[in-house]
Image (cartoon, rainbow, N blue to C red; front, side):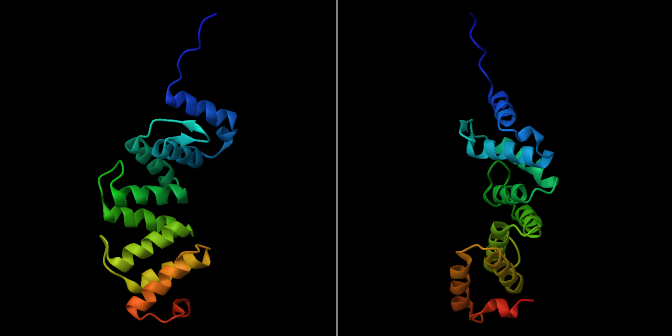
Length: 164
């Protein structure tokens, strides 16, 4: 009896997608899952070699198709230079698209960039608005961040009342 051939990571991922029923998912979700597997080296318990450049490629494809979490992870990649050249303008672009779909982590990270002026022009009003949106979407630690910002910047204690 002959041994089974060694499966490459891409074949193992395809097999995992097939076995978990994910091949019926939309193209943006499949490309997100591929990017996530490359970024973190894990796909539903299967271990893969981490490859941030490949992750950025798959995440970009899913992000361009409108996948909010892929847009967020691609923005993180740009903000930190993971698999792509560090680029705050691209990070803001992808965070904005993801935040526009009410993805709370993107709202929080974009608010932080705007509050600190990290690679983008400072915009306290937009930062407050995004922080309030992240809070409304259920991100627990945003309340503490908002309180810290309010103390440091003399924001109104209930800054969400001032945001329309």
